[in-house]
Image (cartoon, rainbow, N blue to C red; front, side):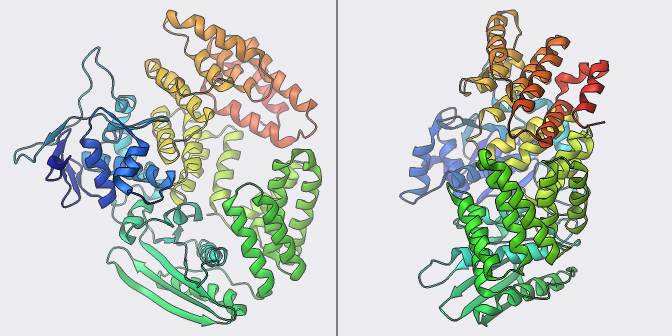
Length: 624
């Protein structure tokens, strides 16, 4: 591998490890040193599977490294290859081998010839093994036209701007460092950061990256410009919190990424009871520096002891480990007991009850009753609280009054139109009404504010599929997989579904081989009924799928039947699922909403739309 450290050519790209640059027809990408180390290691073993464990040992040594850190490293490597190559096919030169590691499918030539001309990867000769990038070869024109807007998390209205300068001021609030002597105040420092982030997100003139993406860099040694590049923002806010028994010191600084200069900075040395005012002051100063406008600040600060419990509740909500929802509810209940006038704590408590209803379905009715009570109390104290309207909407959707739920949902949107959760939910509800185009539009905005979330990318893939934009959908699905390679069977089935729709059945076996036995694998196998030699296996899988329990599997079953032209059986499969709902003790209108969404988003079911039974079915499910 030492012979590569002076430079090499990778499918025509010029890689210079000493300067950290990868150059090609798309320009020059500046690569983080650790990412470059990974590329050099992979280039030393082209065509071979590099085990994840070996890679960690060689690159990170004895340091403790999370799977997320490795995944993000490869995500960045692929991104830089595509950037330098000027084509998304270069991203596919790095292949993830499930449960094993990674493989570089590329030619490597040591040295940097002066006349070397970067070239596009060539397709394999007939009969030769296919590279992974062949799966998106047909999408090259589409990806080149919209790559910056979709693959790098920009919304449509930003897609036409230069890659180095977003169309509007944008900011990422990094988690403030816990500098307390005992290092036991992470819930407090995280809470301060999140509160500032949420305040800034209220500004219509700012694109604020969500907590999920901004906080993902917590334990990594990455320079601010690199973080800004990955999140596609113009500014970054960072800081620290040092807390003692009776004092809190908060330092914050706003950085303009284009100049790496401090636009604003300040240090607050205050009593713990003044923290709420400090958060508002920081948010106001940052907004002013960015020429943005914030909504009015809360007039009455909560009791400090209540606010402490509130931050602990939010900490457990974000951590979401075993038992954390119960801890979230515990601390939030304590917060409102200490300060019954703390409206936001009531709203968050309603959220805790909402989630506990899913975690404990046997007690769902009781939790939802508590959810409604907490949400109503929050709105009694503060009618302009968007999260409270959302939780009340969710309660009504699962009761006999979905129209009332829609009313509260619209109020939440009006109050906080840029919230990632609300954007994602708007996309889902548009899809459920059959408007896949609107669903894509809302979900793109969610991805722009949460660009490192595999869930958001996978959701966008589903809506693009419903809009029959299959190549784009496949690209988004793969980004979701890159961000979280430990994807479940449903994600794998989605990629198989898209490849079948694209007529690229020969690329599906490798995915199916990674799937565990069960309904999703049988669904994938049942779809792959060509060539004739595969039909016996497909038919056997269809039989198993048809014999399965009539819940999620029947949506899949209806798709297979429709794909095979068996309309009557497809309608029957959906009806079996509806009958299962009616027998379910926790059945509600929300289940029919999700069924309606799945039906609308499936291109396999398009042939059923001309059947009179389709319109009647959608109407019975609450659609139009």
